[in-house]
Length: 144
Length: 144
Image 1 (cartoon, one colour):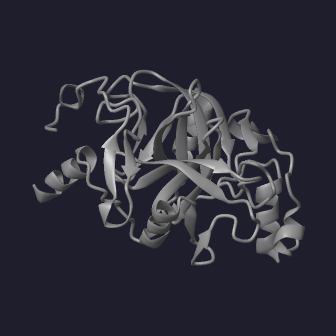
Image 2: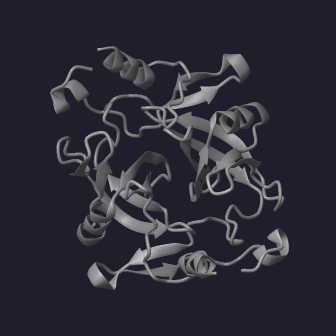
């Protein structure tokens, strides 16, 4: 009963009540405010969410590095948040952003630079909008 | 070394190699192919992914019901997939869809019908594009 009430409030109410998963994260989808293209899917913990809201720039939580990071802090390719929305059960966030340069660590504008083609055993990927805007080896000082 | 090679292949190669999490899932973002609006964020297991690719209609895996489901099987509001893309590390899928009716179980076109406003202790939600296209109580035979 209380769970049902909680769910109803979370879905229909106007209180900001992010529902973090067992790791303390919500999923965040960033789209290009101008084109609607999906730039990336990443995660935010409570602190990343608050910093994003307060600064107007996207902050994320890296699951692999287990660290808070401001998008663009190394590459310079920041995201200015134009609008933030929560989904029905408040476990996912959609931000519409002005992306400076490239969103993807591989140097592409979007992380989604490959389309799925074919089906069954013949399912493959094909490059779409896959030009690099920067050289990741130069930006991150790592082998690619 | 092998991990690094695997990551490189997964990011730069054209082999379809979805990277499922510990629960066997990838994250899926569905956007409206016509407007670019984010309709929903959900999950797919291997079977949902294959069925989506083979049928051209979106299938998901419900974490709460622990069940495979075809989008629209109860509501009739199916999603025809126009394009499917994988992200750099292949743990997220973006599908551009033709949405029949409403994507959200609350009856709204999109699950993202509330914007985040204010900041600090004053962070609130406000309704945006929140008109219902159907009555969930009538469609799902449940209390709302």
